[in-house]
Structures are given as structure tokens and as C-alpha cells.
Length: 351
Ligand code: ADP
Ligand code: MG
Image (cartoon, rainbow, N blue to C red; front, side):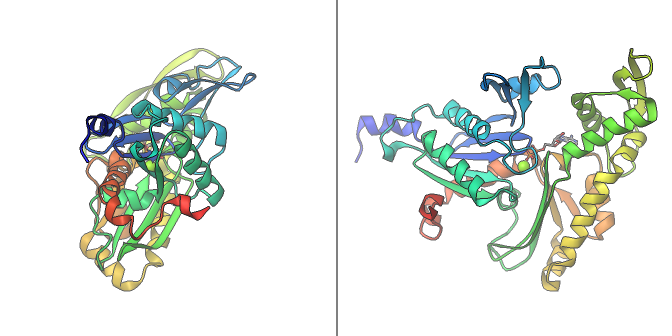
């Protein structure tokens, strides 16, 4: 029934999709679009265990914090290292778009959350409860590769095989789909963070220069690549010389950064080959025909599609807007929640 009160409350009870990533959290409001895109970082005062900042503001503090303040990435390895911090972060992002935890239950939003496929049942419960506490009416958890595949527009419910490789910050997740299910999947703790660490190691070993995580990431994003570039690039690397102790600047080339990234890339390629090996032949032939989609921030690494195509002998391509695939996939699930509701039970039912 139409009532003015209902229509006002309706504005506040739009369903929400969340990508709870190891590096970035994105929030989408049904009918509106992506409203939050911030690092999954929480700055905590160690002694008092008090949260000082969350998201972009907290990431600014990484590597710059006084001894008593730590910047935590609670999902860094694709598992939840700190329940309390994860809960605070999730609550913060949800209430930022929906500050109505005390609405009558029918007016609270339903929330679909994409979580790394490595998290345990206990961790899933923690995420579920945190979202309920933040004011959800119902919470649906979806594995990130599934959400990424939906967001990439893969025909996962059809009888043809399709495949996604999602290279995030802490984890690379890959999965082959057919008839709405995951046929083969794999998750490894090698992705963007590991690449940054390798760049730090390279700078130290080759130039005796200590650089921070942010400098390393900047080098990776601006000149990193997985395959020779038509025009190789250079960039200044700034850090501290470990012998003199003085700040220093060195011009490094994309060829050097590629050398630094060789090891994590090899590990991703190995996992990909193994996953393809385990895929039933009929589905492999579908992959040969339709290709393999790449999502996540790592899909933006220079020439990564060319490299993976060469290694797998299959056409690998970067999905449109790879950083938002998971949250857009969660958004698509929201659109179908009314129909889905009949076949999947909310996680609440599994207690
Ligand atoms: P997650 O889903 O784990 O939160 P994302 O999909 O948001 O991760 O990807 C974050 C990772 O992608 C970070 O390691 C970041 O450095 C990396 N990244 C972002 N843009 C680029 C780029 N242009 N080239 C290479 N790596 C990138
Ligand atoms: Mg992700």
C-alpha cells in the first residue's frame, strides 16, 4: 500500500552490494550505482585499541604512522586476521550509505557481500553478523570469483564453460563456471601486494635503496608490465640509500620492474595452468573459443593479457572496468534477489 511514510523510508532502504576486497572495498546502492570505493584499511591506536580512521584516510597513514598507530588491512591475505577490525570497517562503510540501523525491519536493506573464497565458515559468520548489526534485513554472501564473473558479463549459468582470473591485492582467485556452478577453482596468496614486495626487494638488492610500499605500488602501476612493451618507459624511484643513509633518486625502466615482477607472475601463471589442466576437456574447448576474462586491479598491469594469452595458448582479455567487476556482480545479484530468494537461502538460515 502506498503511504507517504513508506515512500520516504523507501529512499533509505535501498539494497546494497559490497565488494569486501583485500585491498579495496566498494559499495553499490541499488538504483544509484557505486557510492564508495576506498582502501580496506583501518588505522588503529595500539594501546587503546581505538579506531582512528578507516578507508582512504587510513591508507594515507600507511608507513607514516607514529609507533603507537598501526594501519591494518584486516583481509590482507584473503582471510580475516582481525574480526573486530573487519567488523568496524564493514559497519563504517554500511552506515556511511545507510545510517538507519534502527529502521523497522521491513525497511532495512538487503545486502549482498562478495568475500574472498578463502574465508572460513567462522569468518563468514562474522561478516554476516557485522552486516546484520550494521542494519541489514538479510545478508547474502557470494564468493568473489562468482561475483567477478557475473560483473564481467560471463554466461555462467549457461552450459558453456567460462573462466575468470581475478588478480587482487592479497589474493589471485580463478574459477571455471558452467551451468551456474563453479567447476574448478583455485585461490593463491600471490597478487598485487606480492608484486609490490618484489619491487621493494629489487630496489634493495640492486641499488641498495630502501623504498616504501606506496613507492613500490606507484612504480608497478605506472611502468609495471608482464610482457615487453612497444615503448619501454622509465620512472624515478625515490628512497633511502642503505649505505649512506641519505635520500636518493634513481631512474628505473619498465624492463627492470618487469624483471622484479617475474616471480609472482610465474606463480600466477603456474596456478592458471594447473587450473586449466583440471578443467574437463569439453569446457577447455569452450575456453579456447570464448577466452578467459581477467578482473581485479592486477588485470590493469601492463600487457598482462598478452602474457597470459601466450602462456596458456588461449585468448585472455581484460574485463571492462576490472576493479569494479565484483561490486557490479553483487549489484546484479541484488537485481535478481527476488527470484533468487526462492532458490538460495540467506546465510542467516544456516546458523
Ligand atoms: P582486492 O579485490 O583484493 O581488494 P583489487 O581488485 O582492488 O584488490 O586490486 C588491488 C590491487 O591492484 C593492488 O595491489 C593495486 O596495486 C593493483 N593495481 C591497481 N591498479 C593497477 C595497475 N594499473 N597496474 C597494476 N596493478 C594495479
Ligand atoms: Mg577483489
